[in-house]
Image 1 (cartoon, rainbow, N blue to C red):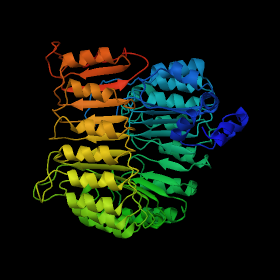
Image 2: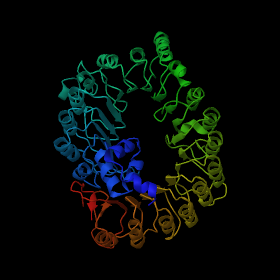
Image 3: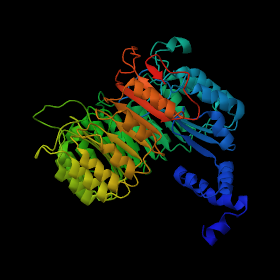
Image 4: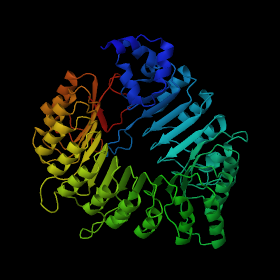
Length: 587
């Protein structure tokens, strides 16, 4: 240890706390904990924001014991792996909320992602945390407007309520004393008249009728409201009045205006939009008439973020009309119906683009691909500042990937999703080894990589040699041998998450090698040669790792020679979980 660092380790705790408070990244906070035991203790005592990536990796008691002054908790349940499409997998928030309700009543913020959140959980939150300010539910399910009523009624200091891509049980009108299907919007009327603290309100994922009068009153009395995302049931005349009441908005999400053609309302809306000069982020608008699409044009010149991933009914020419006016964009989410021509327009218009996500809309004609390598080449040539790229397409070439590597060396996240995951380079019929090899060799800061298309051992050799910072790797399919993951494990010492789909070479021996990798936190495998007996043996050797076998149709063969179709492995301090459904067998 250097003399200067040795001196810093003995700074008074008060000084270190002030220094640590300047570190906003959890990655940086985790790093300072490793300097020495004294710093570990001081940092743990002053950390206010805590993030838990897996709710089954440890219990809430350990979290609070480590961070006794925490005020904000981010908690994730179901893993993000696309292959884990199990309805009742688990990830229940209630045990965590019950513990913190009893032992941490000073909690102010809660962010839950991919978890089961019951109405009981929301009611407990609303009654237990007297200074509660922020609730974010992202891709969660299990709750209804009954729980939202509790949050709106009882959280007097609420600043943020974000409901993003959730499955809300909406047909509960009889419980709230209204008509069936109308209950979803009535919770908006439950905010007390004294509520004026909202900074962010997002209910775009809800589908039912909205209490428009209550919404207008709520927005009018919240002068600090900066983010407002609405669902499809808010018509343009109401949006116009909301914008008049909240010209300070910076983030706006709007719904569907497909059935509106009134020109007077359009002119009023356009006038209101032109006065909202602070809006930097725009999302929503699943469909528009051409008339009402033009109403949003005045705000386009100032946009930094544009999310068109829900615009399933907008044709490519409408998307291009909007994007052509957004020259300051840094973040763009679109569907693949934008086509290569549309991405060419993006490349010509959005020179400051840093993040691009192109999602798949649906099946396309085999002879008429919606998106090819041409769009990717255009983006790489026109957007050199790109650091995050998700690209779903119909075909790809090694030459295109090499071009991306040369033009976008600052990529930290790259996900390629070819619709046929085993397809080769469509011009040479070769695996994508050289293309992905160029990506990992050129992009030194790459942390997340998702592979798609035909692959061989060579690409994994490249990854092990060059992707030193890699933390997450997803392998769509592989025709390689049993050495490929050995290359990755030996070279990628920071790898924490690994997803392997359609790789039959994975056997029990290789699986054992994977879990011995000291930083691997979780692993998802499908279509492998691993047998149930091999999994049992592994569970004996690695007791601090849960091995969950995912069955089909709730039927599970128990003999050791049975090949496991899907399995999810993760490190834990709590042992096997007790809430697994019948379709999940924990060893």
